[in-house]
Length: 434
Image 1 (cartoon, one colour):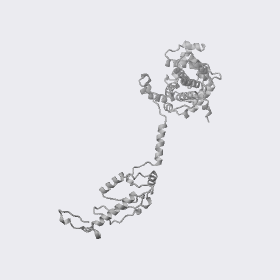
Image 2 (cartoon, one colour):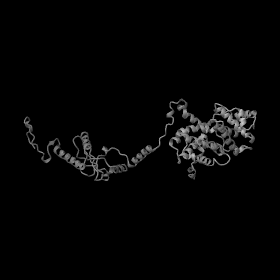
Image 3 (cartoon, helix red, strand yellow):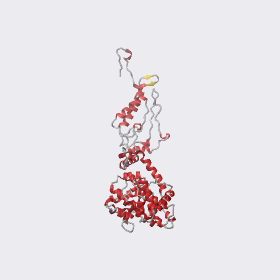
Image 4 (cartoon, helix red, strand yellow):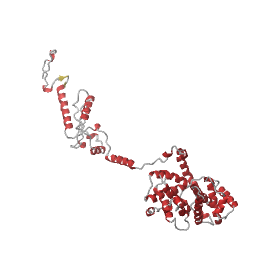
């Protein structure tokens, strides 16, 4: 090879690379170039061929950037498979004794040596095109991917909870801004409005059967006077709270019921029945003086505490959560009024009675169990928590037309209440009982 330059005669001499090449100081430049080219050819062959990638070559900064750009632009190299990623993740890094170094004498003049690290144990399969690990994007493990897909599917399938107050946002009577606080307070105070489920044991002259007769009769009186539903629930609450604290003889029990209804009317109604009307419906069994004396005794015994949450308060909220229609509402009231007569239902709190009545009514009308996430959220009761109370209500529904205490059944057999008592009970709830 001859390098010539007409303007520089000193370069018109042949340059000989035989026997080791041009001398530059104490090093032979030709040998170094041939050595580097041989090393590059070995790297290129290993990259293009379908072999493992056993070499990691440390280069200068500029050569390293060129190498990265070439690898990223090469369409032949694709990401590693998940199987290989799993193997990498489960493999411990090699110990220093397993790393074999190449001959360190092949160093270049720029101070960066070519070191070859060979790990025979972790070679890639021949069918995969190798790619430097530092170019790989992290991939999720198969198990993690499956878990993410399962979580996403559960989020999609999960039933949403409806905002039942959005429709009343502009209604000042609905007090949407305070409704949650109000019902939180009701749930807190309902414990204080309940009585012991065995308080009748302290009564020496009356029993639970007499209580049932009294309430069944008061339900008919309530319907005859066309009083509000709130009045009936408060009446029963006042009777139980008074009897749990005061012993009463049986001939005064009817007087207790009449006075309890009178007080409930004064608290709930706009038009209150006069004392004379109550005396008439009792067939003049009591005088006006006895009524007023009992009224004073009852108020003092209860310490004038008339503001208690009854099942009616919760039913209005639960109807809204269930998006109920008139049929569900009437059947729910039918079931809960049957429960008012029964002494054994005193063990349930008012909110449980209300939720179980709505749940049982839905089951009876639809023919299957119906209790969605919205109802569960706003009632704070799951279906399993309501089953015991609901099954008792189904039993009352089945026996409503039998026996002597049929006042509730007769009331809801009329057209005024849509002949609700004729609805078939939810028998399947009893069949699932263990």
